[in-house]
Length: 90
Image (cartoon, rainbow, N blue to C red; front, side, top):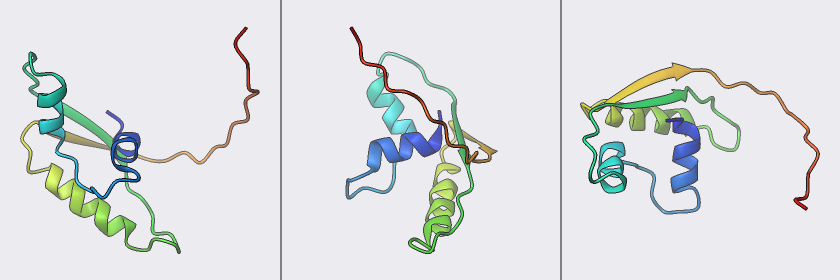
């Protein structure tokens, strides 16, 4: 799963900042035996508007590492902007 999009998609505009991925999988897939969760993310950089963002991310990633089912994979962000025309369905 893509950690950045999952985190912001699930928690943005909520008071919550921690997401237990193992519990989330148990709730969404109660009939499945989830043995491994692959979490893909990239290290964030500090921003003038949010200098503590990297610290919060590191705390969260350390918490995820305590879950035996979770394996974290690190990548990097691509800052490319695409322009697409809006298509209206018929």
